Image (cartoon, rainbow, N blue to C red; front, top):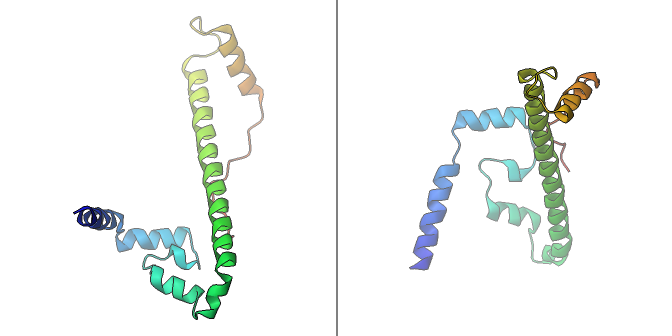
Length: 137
């Protein structure tokens, strides 16, 4: 019974995760990759068979697992960096909106907030934050 529910869940999840060919093509154009894990038609069994074509090749399984773990850590770090960057952009935008909506000369502004808007207006433009995908790693 539990296996049937799990199988149904997996099938539903796979149906939701299927991207239209147009979307898949757009992703491939924006983020070109030679990594087989990024392919829409990724097949786990084929991938494992390419990593370990013979029984003797299983001797280096620890090395392969460590490389994959390192790759996962790098991807996690890159995701965190992008999320933090987007969060900072959102905070900067909210502060800028507050400064333009309630100018520092307005009576409803707290002195500290007015100083913040004033000091923000004196700062040079920050370099654009990059959300570009890092190269293969």
